[in-house]
Amino acid sequence: MRRLLLLSNSTNHGERYLAHAEGELLDLLAGCSRVLFVPFALHDRAAYTAKFRSRLEELGRSVDELAADATGRRQIETAEAVFVGGGNTFRLLKTLQEAELLSPLADRALAGMPYLGASAGINLAGPTIRTTNDMPIVEPRGFDALGLVPFQINPHYLDADPGSTHMGETRAERIAEFHEENATVVVGLRERAWIRVEGSRAWLGGERGACIFRRGSAPEERATGAALDDLLI
Image (cartoon, rainbow, N blue to C red; front, side, top):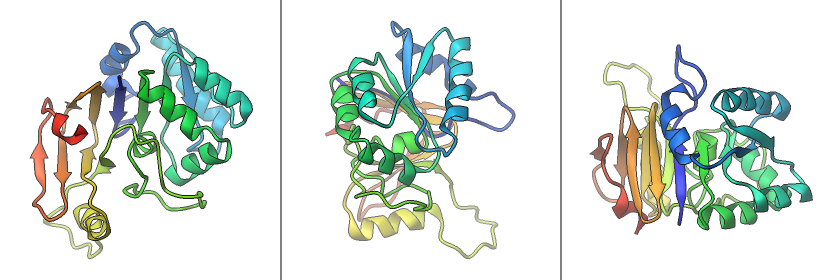
């Protein structure tokens, strides 16, 4: 039974790290005393882990840093819960691929180990990372991700500003380009919003909701508290 907390972002302006989702995070981690942290999306893994550890210790949880080697497989196999931090999605995926940790992580999460992530960490939860906002600063072996949910996610989704004079593509236009080549549903998850999954149930939490994009259809708005069960089918 999948147990997922997929945060669009980990930090909001003027707030502490993970403050906006603290209650939801603690709810999913109930009964878990240790969290395995995946820092691979940032270059300075030690500093990133220290930041995460400091915050989680305030919430009464111990933190272990995932190793990018054979030790990492054993860590995943025995982990109570995992949190995949944000950063560059291409670097995150490439590191997991090279350490041969992608499949073990997927197996544990699909079997019910709590999986929490933010930004790049929720791009990784979908079938592929093709709807990330990040630059491909490294080249992974492919774009296939964990497949914990059957839909794509676009974190940090931004609505078009009708008063803007910027002539570049909007986020919705980028997702439309994705649907020119792919049929998978995309959830545009706004800042301060998250997706919670418990088995065959999924719903939106946070403050700002999401926009659901389907190939050949108009975008559909869903507000905080709305069910996403239909997207799990």
